[in-house]
Image: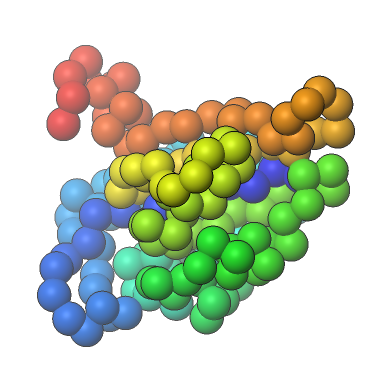
Length: 158
């Protein structure tokens, strides 16, 4: 099973938290990452999204139907993400989870076999692939931030 963790793109600050919108930079980040993901995603990939407006807007850039999952809201637990995605490394399929830090960083760390959390940049994708062979059931297939995509196009970092 492929599990793709996609952190929402850059968003406005301030309450109410669930209603925060993407900034112009965030809209560009979401667009750039969606352009990178779209040709790589399996046709039947499921997309699960936090109810927060910034996550909804990030996922919408992909141009695919998605399911809003209340359990993926800001403050979700690592176990909420794994349960919502039905994560099982040896299963078939692909699930994209659009959510928030620190939760996505905790999921990434767990899948990498570490404790704690890793930093997942705004708008970044961490793509994990489950497998049945070897001593590790999970492989990090790709880790890419929108800054890297932009740097590749313009030759400099943002």
